Image (cartoon, rainbow over all chains, first blue to last red; front, side, top):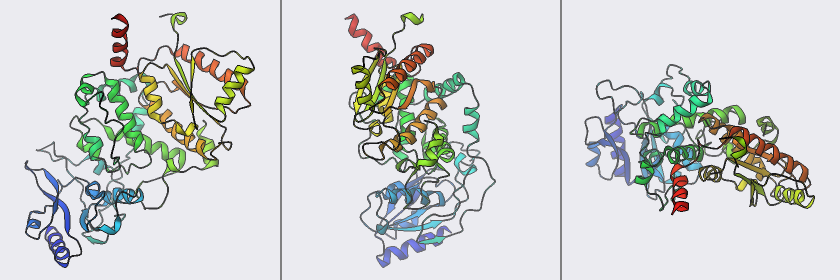
Length: 284
Length: 152
């Protein structure tokens, strides 16, 4: 499959259909695969695709103004759609090759190479957008409930919930990796980029700034989060950030109807829309 | 700390067209409501960013109320429909993170409902009295900085 990918990419480069190719190459560590733009056929020999190519490449297409070929896994295409919907990506400037996916592996467990949490509960096995496909759509996986973790926390007492989050978020070093890697966190100026308290001060301060950061980070992507799980993967402190996003997704599903962000590029999101009758049930 | 010692800080975001006028009516009708309520006028309840609410908590508010026109009566036609969805999510989100959901209130108050405004605020302040001081959301860095200033 990798050979076919390389061959197609070279053909498209040579024909002039695209001027650069977005893919992965080997990084500094054995299992690290880093996103990279290839511009020549020779460079394309370094293209890699395996279980460690977990990075969602959609974000790198933001604002692209030259024809770019990108290899996207099924779940990545949802982020692409969401960004096209938000006018961040010009779809005309992209050429998407959907590639099959067997589930991505964790980088941190060098020995075990365990599958990422997001892949264990994957619901996005079919490409939502592509110009051509290489390989199959991912096979439907074992049905794990992605909201199980949310339910466990909801069942706790309020004090236990507070302690749970305090314990996790106190580890936050405010590296901003979760924000920077999130495909739909694409504001040019973030509300948290503030000159008064820099990152270092925040890390040393009490947990609340972190708590607020994480509430707002999750809230700002509410209704737009495709549950791609990149925030969770990027977190160096293993904070279960996906639980915050999934709480919002689960509430949206319950209160405003089932919604999967990025399924298409037209439907208004749940927070930019309303349903007068249905919202009466919200009880506020 | 006894309840009598506790003087809660309450922030109420009121929309310009209904709730702020409702608060005004409560005043001109000489209805009593707790003095701890500090009103911040916003053009529409939809203007209230969740960040405003969290910042208020962080800077020492013990309760935050958001008041707007009744659904269907928004001056901008649809603003409060968005508010309703947003605030419903934020309520649940705070609850999920272990913060008492009663510290936040969303209430529809029209310009004719001075009495409702006064009653809403009285009840809300009473609730906050029962919940006690907001410690879970306070930013100790800001609180401590404030203390240093008063000492020096």
